Image 1 (tube, rainbow over the protein chains, first blue to last red):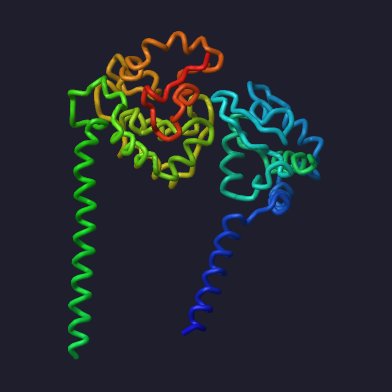
Image 2 (spheres, rainbow over the protein chains, first blue to last red):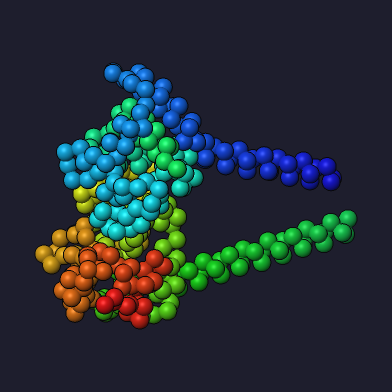
Length: 138
Length: 191
């Protein structure tokens, strides 16, 4: 009887662990590796560059907004939505360890924000440069 | 054998008690749903004057604010505006074009959008005062006749106030807005 209780307790803990790991499957590093595989299949692929990422971050890409319009010039700072004024937690993983840890969330926000800033989805090359930049900021 | 009979009888009694208490809870809910017509569509006598005064309405409002998917997704860029402040027709139209959401891309995956749409429709308002002045279904709460009526005394002053900027920034003045409580007694306009 007691063995059964202990066994089911252990199974319960394992299942919780699995659930958590499947939700938080990514790290910024593992997502960058995924992007590298995607980008290397794109035309004109170059090694990811933090410097290109920094330029991309501040550029308005011919329209109204840059990434910095909401996330501020400093990605470790708290941002503010350009329209609603709602506060946005820091974007750089060094300042906000939850960033780039959930694939679903990463995809949702890249799709939205790339469309807002560039009027199209970003390439894997652009996302890779961008993340490489964010990961260099301490 | 007698022991088992008692055991079964005891089980039956427990089951019955359970069923009765569940049905009691639901009956209670039914009562409240009738009362909800204060917020909803059935009662017309409070039209345009349903400013959330009643404690009971607040409880109901808080419960209606409890959908976790709606709360999570609709509060990422702005305050999650209560479903009860627009008609279902408005919510449906808004949810059908999230990629172009008042000038921002707020796209969601189909499954999440479907759940949120259903929630918004269930909790939407039906009254005419929740349409705009030409009788159309507006996409902005601030364009409903109800909203204009409620804010007619403060609208122009508040728009000029740099701390408010827009009438859509509910929480600047409605201090309990995130809890779904918009009663006048919780209002404090920043100077």
